[in-house]
Image: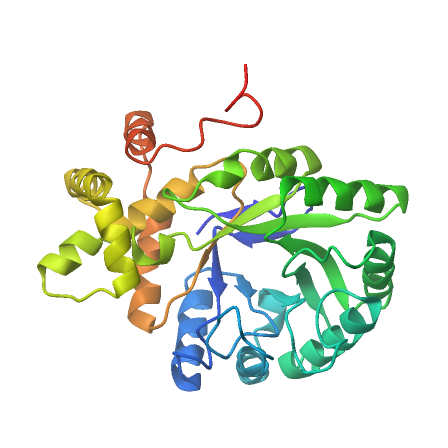
Length: 328
């Protein structure tokens, strides 16, 4: 396992980040412990969760239950590994039915942080991510709340998730005016099939010194060898079947290339992300210990320049960075 600085900070994190959205939802507590043990035993030192995790994730979710954080907290207390890991969680999503039980008001940030610390059984959150942009709360209020948490030692760094390039720039300029470090990392959806952030988010991360942590590196399973699995009799969901039909020729070319490389498609997809210079660490979300163990192969794969070119031809991005991607 290799370690990289998280953005412009001096903090070293592993190339793979253990995402825990499945804990308490599709993965039971015992298996969650085993996954965390396997991850840390193999060099992963970055564990990511969110206060809302532990329930099936959907746009109409009314409130989270903090179960993923509670599972991690009990594991931390049992394992004694707290000081061996970089622990991240998130704030924004609804954690109650009240009008102030969500978003990024100073009121909610303070309460959400205290609740996360209690569930995680720890005295600090190493990287506190804003799960989404809040366009109804001014940056003066958000940064004041985050600065206070840093002063109190309850959080060390602040990150963003699902921000636009413009949001990152605005946040950083306001932080700079307050002599505050501001954002150090961004979590965005990014994979071979979903490359929109190459237009503006990645250039913004590079300019402002944020480490990029992609989520959904396998495109919801699309890049994990779906054609081979279908040929073996594995049934896909209606949504996945639609994607397979939409990307049939690309998938055929992609899985053929992976076969030529003698590598699993999932490992190649992860390896491609780790070859992108702005990517610090890729989120992985295994449901089982077996899935966890298989993902370690990705950090060992070295993709040749010609292979990277072939992958770009199969899965073309938006054409580069804005505005050169669409204007002369």
